[in-house]
Structure formats: structure tokens, C-alpha cells
Image 1 (tube, rainbow, N blue to C red):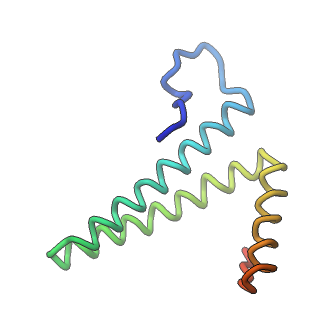
Image 2 (cartoon, rainbow, N blue to C red; image 1 turned 90 degrees about the horizontal axis):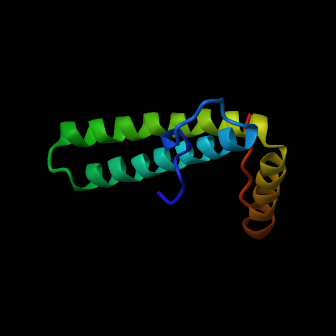
Length: 101
């Protein structure tokens, strides 16, 4: 991971809003790394029980991404705008429409 972990800095006060957004992005990055790890481990596992467990844990990590993303979007209106713009561009270029409800 390339981001500085703000939790490792000795603190005497709470995170600022900007630091909290950075911490949430770091958490999202860590969860995405975990998903990739567990899916790769499942792919190469010779044991079916282990493969199923790796995939189950990967699925849980995907939920964590959603939880952290929801918190980030509640704090960062620019991120919401740009996320919507990204979805719009994908739809225009590929015809793929993603609707989160």
C-alpha cells in the first residue's frame, strides 16, 4: 500500500475530516488487497474446503469495501460527483449500466 497510515502517527486529537477521508481510502485499499489475495489463494488451493473458505472471506471483504465506501461518500461530495461521472462515462462508452440502489 502506498498511502501513509494516519493511525500510526502519535495523535493527541481526533482526525480532521481530510485525515478521516484518507483513513477510509486506506481501509478501502487494504480491503481490495485482501480480496485479491484471498481470490488468488482460492484459485491455487488444491483443497475444495480451503478454496470455499478463501472465497467466503473474499466476499466478506467486498462487504467491507462497501461499508467504507459508504462512509467516504458521506464525507466527500466531490467523490460522489466523480463516481457518478465515472459510471456515466462507462455507460456511454460500453453500454454497461450500473445502478446502485
